[in-house]
Image (cartoon, rainbow, N blue to C red; front, side, top):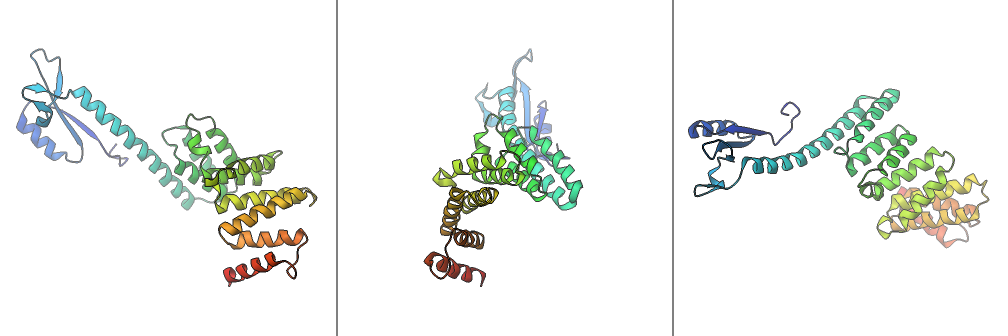
Length: 275
């Protein structure tokens, strides 16, 4: 445990001589030190030697109870360490490898997520970001689909950042039915007010725009939806991406800068943003 830099190590010591026990305890200040002794002649009961745990001559805490308490704390700490170690290894992989080599290393890292003690929202999000950087959209989709089978799946599949990356990957992977599934995922998320953040709103606009283009520009409903979501994204947080797409789609829908107050306003905001 020490070689892995893990904390909350436990040292159990039989208290035969008080002075010796105290010396050992002082030399192990970084550990959870538990000294114990027997309570009767037949040595059948073990209690901790801590004087603060004793009332009169009656032992207050048994060794078993103390160890159970420490083990519960240790389990929590170990899980935290495993998550931190995974994130550190993931950062190291992204710094050291590129191309096909990075892809293989990330796939190996992804297998470590089979251990439920490693899973957390931060871990999953970082893994998805790493896979997005190498454009492995299939692995991104598969990872989120796998999460749908775990007991506490709602922690992950209802998280806005993970929803965004999942819908993004589906739209980019573009296998049969992917874009429609991406549209369902993103619109379902946007039915909740707390998910109305710029990234998710603009991604919905992008998916609608892609569906419109995919229809040879005949699906006017998707054009209207794309305009709606890019407009909303631009209202929530004015930015170049939403503004340029909104202006482009408004022109496609038949408006022009000379007669459209909205296009003029978008142009002014974009001019201030771009400089």
